[in-house]
Length: 362
Image (cartoon, rainbow, N blue to C red; front, side, top):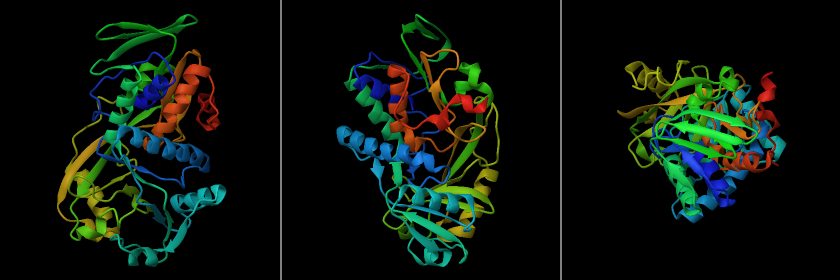
């Protein structure tokens, strides 16, 4: 979100300084691991659909200027019992926004290429516009675009304090101090620590991803295997075709429910984590359960309602907040950067963001 905001602000002629605690890109948040899903029929809330449609346009524009593919359209599959939140919510978003889609029975999904083996009475929503983003390269592309527009980006520099008043903002780091008219804060799991005004609404959570080598690799090529979200009795899972590294990648949303400070969450995957993932694949995608190739952890930062915070600070109109993306934010990053730039320059945005205001928690 920070790299996207820096890119949009610099493109509008602003004098931009980006400060990153870790590397660019890095593995301490929710953006590493090579790929992130982009889905159009958002089961979470149909109000997200215009934001993701705008993101699709912006990702396409970004990859054209970057000169390297960032967006891979495989289509998306949302499956589970017909009355599950994922299936019913996906169908609702398709209906509200008149999205092209196809409803399959579980038996029809299992008969298609893609290695699925789901109960016959399940339903699946197939939508052709989504797929996945090359997430690491998306960040690099936004930073490169910001550089080309004159922005300064400083990595390996940790913010230690900040203040704001009518005259502007000041930011202190472990390397120096900076003054500006406006501050945009996109600090991920560290946002609550840096911004006590919203800390009670932000909970970091540990999540784990796995890459398993398929026993039938062709089933998991991106020509055959749309990205998926599954709402099943074992939990809510999501996954990708094989891409760049061995194995098909998948994870469980809100994995084991482990929450805490970003420093205290265990970043080392365990055999228990692996077993949780493998049991899902053995049940629903048995051709994908060859040897484990890779495990990786990431951090969600959850709000109580799992919706984002995109708003100005409750006490400081010259401080803009982008936080609480709750494990489903990356797909929106290009448009979120645009929203944050709007708020930083104009104090408002034409995007429909009422559902993301801090005041909803009060």
